Image 1 (spheres, rainbow, N blue to C red):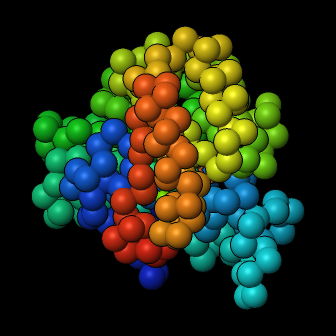
Image 2 (image 1 turned 30 degrees about the horizontal axis):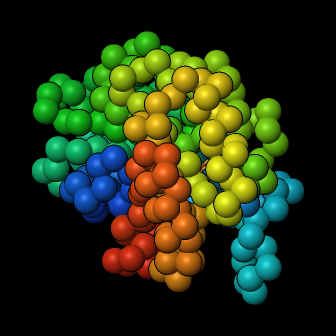
Image 3 (image 1 turned 90 degrees about the horizontal axis):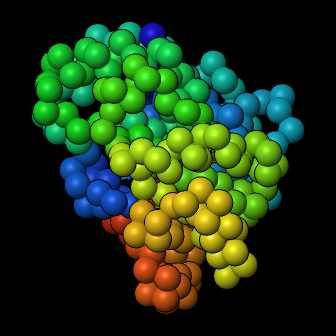
Length: 251
Ligand SMILES: Nc1nc2[nH]cc(C(=O)O)c2c(=O)[nH]1
Ligand code: SF4
Ligand SMILES: [Mg+2]
C-alpha cells in the first residue's frame, strides 16, 4: 500500500509531459506520492507535507485564505493493483514517481515496481527526489533514472536536513542520476558549486532551474540562469508545465 497525494478526491496520478529536467517534453505518467521529510518554503506540493499542527513556514502563509492541510483529507491509500491499473490505462512508457519525497515510502515501492515491470517491461521509471535517501538495492534494481534535486539554503530547510553527504555521494556515483538545482538568486551558484565539487559531480550532469510557479517569476530569472549555464556548461531546465498550464495541480 502507498500513500498518494489526493486531487479532486482521487489519487494524483496524471498523464502529462515531463515539464522539467533531462526528459523535458516527454509524455509521462506522474505518480505523486504523499509525505516529505523536508519543508521548502516555496514548495508547490505543500499539500503532501504541510499538515495542520506543524509549525513550518511557507511563502504562501502571507496569502489570504492559505492554510495548512488536513493530513487525512490530502492522502489516498492505494494498493499496487489499483495504482498499476490506473497507470496501465494511460498507455504511456515514461513513468515519473514524484511527491513529496517518493523515497520516504521506498520500502512500500518495491512491490509496486515489481508489478509495473511485470505488466510492461518497457516502462522507463524515473524519480523526482530531494537526494536525502539512498535508494534500497531492490528499488534501484527496478529504476532507470533519478532526477536529484538537492535543496539549497533558499529552501529555508536546515543544512543538515537537506544535505545528506552519503546520499548525494551515492547518487553521484550512479549513472542513472542527474542533478537539478532550484535557483532563486545569483548567490545560489556558490552553493551549487560547493555541492558538485564535494561530490565530484560533472557539470554536464547539472541542470539549473528557476524557482517559481508563475510564468512571470520564471521569465524574470531565465536570462541570467541561461548565462550561468553557458559559462559553466550546465544545462538549463525550464518548467514547461507552468508555461503551458500555469500553477495548477495535476498537470
Ligand atoms: N508536467 C509536470 N512535470 C513535472 N516534472 C516534475 C514535476 C513534479 O512535480 O515533481 C512535474 C509536474 O508536476 N508536472
Ligand atoms: S523536497 Fe520537494 S516536496 Fe519536499 S518540501 Fe521540498 S520541494 Fe516540496
Ligand atoms: Mg511540481
